[in-house]
Length: 125
Image (cartoon, rainbow, N blue to C red; front, side):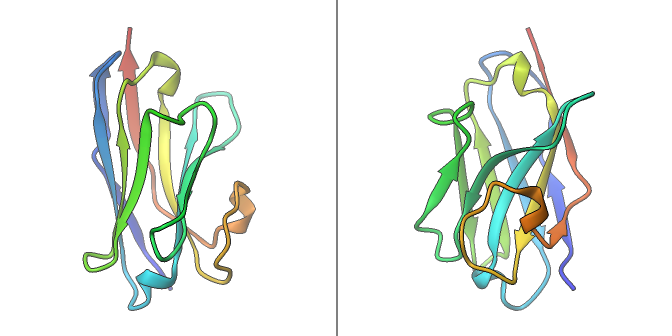
């Protein structure tokens, strides 16, 4: 069983920055693929970014490429999402997720095995 706890959300003005953190339980965090998804009101949950277990390979949705950076610190069992140049359309509940059975990249929410409770990010114009 893996538990994920997000933190770092909040209210920020357009153009600002936030860093989300996702603390994970489990002794094999270094083997997990970690992903970030988001869900805006009335919309489906969408892929934002993921990072493979080694931390050397990252993938981003086109909408956040160049503005967001995903990283993981295996020594701290924590994944991060640095969000810069935030836009009002980035407003959503952000979820971190862990993929533990497979080690490859995936944009599908169904490919992830464990989820955090979510943290609200609101970007004002």
